Each structure stands twice: as structure tokens, then as C-alpha cells.
Length: 193
Image 1 (cartoon, rainbow, N blue to C red):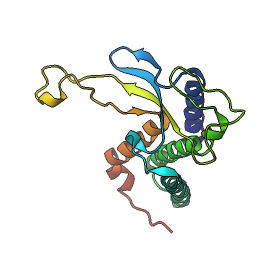
Image 2: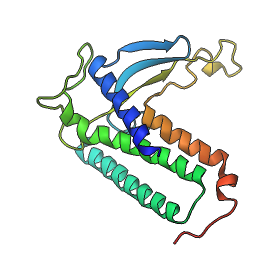
Image 3: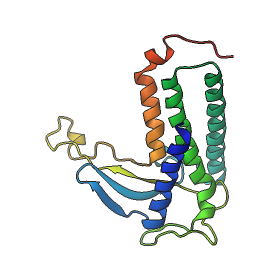
């Protein structure tokens, strides 16, 4: 079973960061490679967001529909004895999606607002209503392109500047693994009922 352990790790890590870091606070894990840097994401990957309350509700609604659809798809694949590797990859994607949905659905009610220099607390009164919370992100690669890099515009810049979370990593790893091993996963296609 992949989904429950991934959700547990994701949520425990996010709650720990939320209750121990102020917004923007950094902690080096491996110098020159990766650090924890707490930010909150109101929208999608890379900070993209749809404007206003309607945009937030539309995004969360899309996430919910996608997660339910993935769940039904996995269930059908299990019944049709799909490749276990493919099912595992989909389970990572599904767990990551659910992890980020939990943040946006309930973190606004569970915690006080995080801010620069202020650490959030368990809410007496939360910072946002149901479905309007922010996603907690914390991992930041600090690796930089070398100063002599042939593409001058990239020299000394971060290789991967976005800040992400465990759920995002699970989604990305699931998708990448499907792309890498697709021939193995789909070499003996079985009909889906």
C-alpha cells in the first residue's frame, strides 16, 4: 500500500514545517544542494493561481474531480490486473494529489496564518474558510549552474528554483516513472472494462 504512507509522511512534514517555521524561514539540509524554505502556495505548481475566490474554488474543484477520477481509474485497473508498477506509480500520483487537496481544503481552518517572523499555531480561529487554504511547500534545491556555463543567461542561476513539497515530489516521480517504464507497463495491454 502506497497511498497511506505517502499521505502520512506528507502531512506530518507539512504540519511540522507549518508549526515550527515562520514564512520564508530557511534551514540548510545539505549545503549547496537542498534546504528547507517554508512558503505557502495559494494556487498550483510554480505559484500559478487563478484570480479571486472563484479561481481558488475552481482550482480546488478541479483537484477534487481529478483525484476522484484517478481513484476510480486505479480501482478499474486493479480489477483488470494491471501491471503492479503502473499501479504503484498511479498511487504515488493519487496520494500526492490528495495531500495537496488536504492543505487547500482544511489548513485554513486548522491553523492561524503564517507570516514573516510569526509561526502559525493550531487554530482557535483559522486564517481561511473551507477550500480556501494554502498549500505548504518547503523543499528548495540550491544547486546553481557553474559561472562558466555555456548559456550565459543561466550562469550562476539556480538549476531548479521552485519550492515544492513531498506531495509534489510523489506526483512528479510517479509521472516520470510511467514515462520511463511505459513499455514495460503497457507491453501486454489488458482491456479495461
